[in-house]
Length: 278
Image: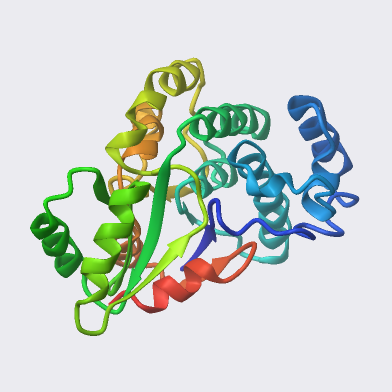
């Protein structure tokens, strides 16, 4: 069985989705109406370099993912029964599975991006080459309270995030571990850590007004690593901004459900991670 994967913020780039917007004119026009600007211009030309800004990057990735997803699903004769998304990409997975409609999801993503962009002063770094348990132990030993694991991406790849200064200190400590390589990530916020908790009340209010449908496919949550339950939809997507992305557990669940083939839209970032998860 096949699963379609959707990446999150970080895959944005100028030229993203080129050629697709003309194929889906009604969806593109709807996106322009909701966002108040040309999504095609932002994704393909980015004349004002706004793709670096979370409030623009998140809607851009979501729309590009959505159009690429529709194209991929149409090309797959047997369709897909399973979907998953990394962080922001989970909104795309829910749309592809029929649990959220495009308009509702884009309005949520726009608000999510606005709220998350307001949290500044944070930093993130990717840690490669050592298991998450080693990273967790190093963080405990540093005694830094403002740094947390933000992503469990693969068996030997995690992401740390938090206060910018403390992340830099923690990165030096973790970098001293045998085999470890620490790479700074160019973001402004401490995403997927408790430092994002102030975003939750307003995001929850937006999510609680949404209706999640039963859908026609299965989505695995990047928060719990278990099958996404629509009766918990608002809670799961609210927690997502301040809770680590457990991609390792999500992939393990999908494999246990019988998934043997992972396809991905908008790049190959997640596919590479899947291949590094036993």
